[in-house]
Length: 439
Image 1 (tube, rainbow, N blue to C red):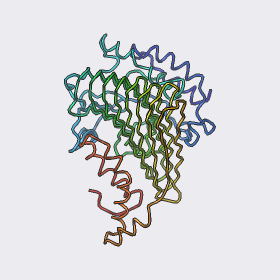
Image 2: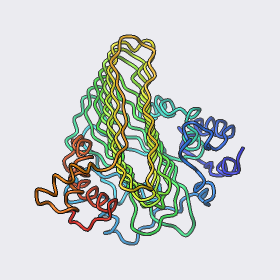
Image 3: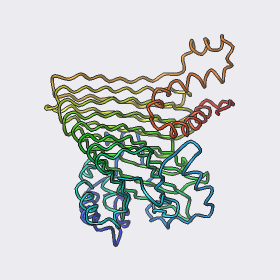
Image 4: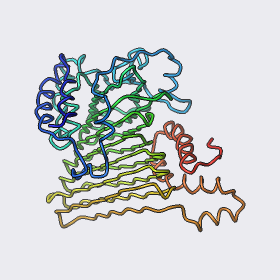
């Protein structure tokens, strides 16, 4: 057992929510048997955890003291974004900043305040979708989480606006950890949109976020889930999203990695019953000496299911991006259709991309494809735009933004798309060190 693994056990809460007690006990048993992932661990081969092990993060948050309410409110919303806010400050729920009521058909409650019916929902799914034995930081979350958030959407509910879980991290006197736990339960025939954002102010951050989100979609349910890691680069973040799909259910997932000293996301989607569809899209934009690591795994266990994955990355300076996309077709998953595409644009000779698309197929009646590219801007395209009177910086912006626009257009929430467009334009200009307008 490494020093970090042993020290992390001290984070185990004395009085967790009732539904987390057995989960915590099992999680600690698994976590105690762990060794920290290293370069010899296949799923962590290209991502070092040294910055986490050398830091002093194994300390609980002191809470969410807010001195500048207006600045915090600007992090939660924008002029374009219309969403029902559910706010956490340094891992603790903020009733004052959250919506005072939920849309019809939606219940949102912390595990510790759940009634008997909600406890039943939690017990049926919590810890059963995210596999602690397979993902070490799920075991850490199981071991140390003292509360969580349930969002339950009743059957046949149609939400007009998105729900936004806004996780705000602010610096504290000492480094600390946030063990965030979310359970999304989408009832049969329901259609919902959830934005899960991690943001911070402009101060130097000193936190380690270990988040686990489990998603249960019932038959014919539909969910658009936006997972946006936009905290400052000093905020270390290891996150996981784990999804179970019912019959004819649809999961539309979008992930954004803005870049940080350590930024890792594991995403697993399980096609358990026939007819389900999964759409995964993502953008990552690390620069300076930042790291972004996306690991996706789609398990096709049933016939007549479909998956489409499209990920785009723009990597600059001495930054590093890791993408590992795996689609696993089980023997019973006949008539599967699955496609995976990962394309990367390097803006510096010092930038690095490690991409590994995988297809593992054990059925003989499927249609699958996968591919990956790593390149720089096309000189002929740049020359063409320059020959039409467009200056160099504007031409670079046009080509770079066009590189990710296909993925950005997959966002169906117009307000969120309006929020991200200028932010991504600004990030691209920083990648190329351009002095161009981004509005």
